[in-house]
Image (cartoon, rainbow, N blue to C red; front, top):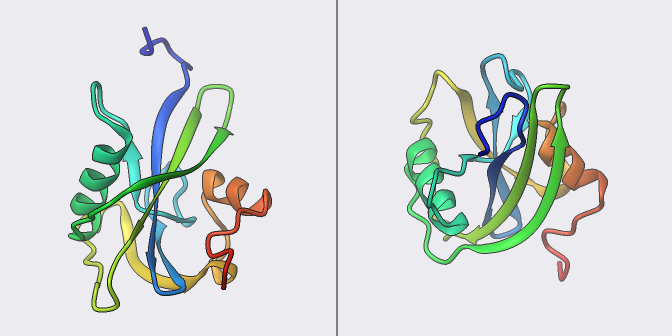
Length: 140
């Protein structure tokens, strides 16, 4: 179950917030190469959404997250054979937090940007979240 060709997969995108900015990186590779995306990745068998978010962020950026909370979900159909359900998790970090590029084969580097200033083109799950008008900082 879940391993059938073309079966939807579960992805986790992490909205790491530092003041009024969010962390994004430019992807490398065949799946979304050249597109801006959040840190994240595939949910592993038996893993909680929160643990997946913490693991992926640590592996990709070296940032250790504390509290992580569900934010949103998007249904991303990339093609007839690639379909992800992406859960967006949110975490806050302190002003001194910096991201390292620990997977340079998968990402060109990380940048802190304003929610309304995310570079284009954006990776499909993030693009859908933005198109839906998601407010990451509703009180600012």
